[in-house]
Image (cartoon, rainbow, N blue to C red; front, side, top):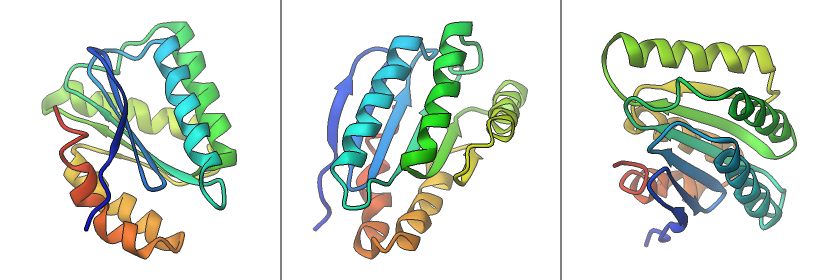
Length: 161
């Protein structure tokens, strides 16, 4: 039996879900400083509830979101990435969509992760279906075998539309 994900926040801009040692968020609009800080609070809270204070982050950007953010949102995102050094086993970022715009957004995200030098594995994907097996492998490496087996079924639907 797969554990049921906990939707801890859901509005017109952002859905945040926790499950096992994973925080998953789906951006429906461009990230704002306030929403990025909210994600950070949920990351820290989940990490504090785990035995080793380590979690995996899955971030999904719906088509046409995420590439153009304010300077304050970029600063908050950079801070969140740096704070992740303490708690993240890995970060999977999904930029949904086809064509040049989505590909450019994925390239920008990859470049930001290189510049931040996060200190934890990061990878950018084009779909949640591509990202979840990688999240599963991170959980498996952390010794969470059962959760690694169930994560795809648990999070596929809550991280889409």
